[in-house]
Amino acid sequence: DAGVIQSPRHEVTEMGQEVTLRCKPISGHDYLFWYRQTMMRGLELLIYFNNNVPIDDSGMPEDRFSAKMPNASFSTLKIQPSEPRDSAVYFCASSLGRDRGLDEQFFGPGTRLTVL
Amino acid sequence: AQKVTQAQTEISVVEKEDVTLDCVYETRDTTYYLFWYKQPPSGELVFLIRRNSFDEQNEISGRYSWNFQKSTSSFNFTITASQVVDSAVYFCALQINFGNEKLTFGTGTRLTIIP
Image (cartoon, rainbow over all chains, first blue to last red; front, side, top):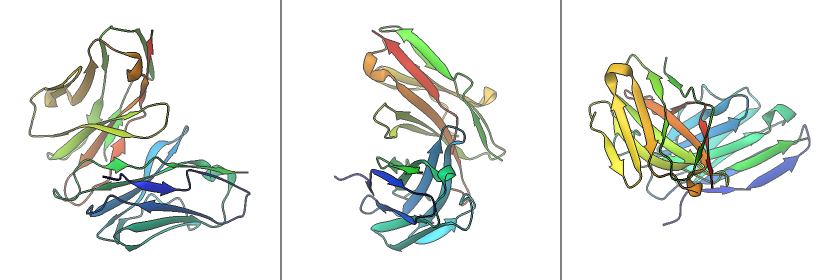
């Protein structure tokens, strides 16, 4: 079975540019999570969806960040405009949801974003 | 609010030694779940174990074992006969019930196994 798929794996962009990160969850999983990992802040949740509906976006740093899940097999995280402090590894994860989302979350390989 | 503390920032042991990674958590909820994830140098996060708050039985999986003690709010992870492939950053995480499915991670423990 394919795991969580993220693209691109690496992204280098210049400050002010729009960045779009993509995620395909494991088929049949009802929950999708976006996390960010930095040295300073560790792993932190940005937003998560249940059945394509955003449930908690309190971790989204500011209005420059937005996330969508138009269908069960695709989600995007967009940063516009990007800033150097957005440089991090962004992980997407999904879980089955048989126990109200408290199943183990399976993580994608991450997207390493560098904003110059 | 939930909190997970991994006081050990870095640990180095010689191959074949046993090593225990500590995890202490805080939550006011009586129902919650605890997890351990491994992040090898390649960067992906690998799920290791999930344990709910009502199950305090210790668990063993090969060379890995976990000790859950509600009395001390700890969920420690022991690797027996460590191997170089165990070198990674290990994260403990907490997830509570009642509509809050996000994982709260500890800061991680970097484990280095010296050949």
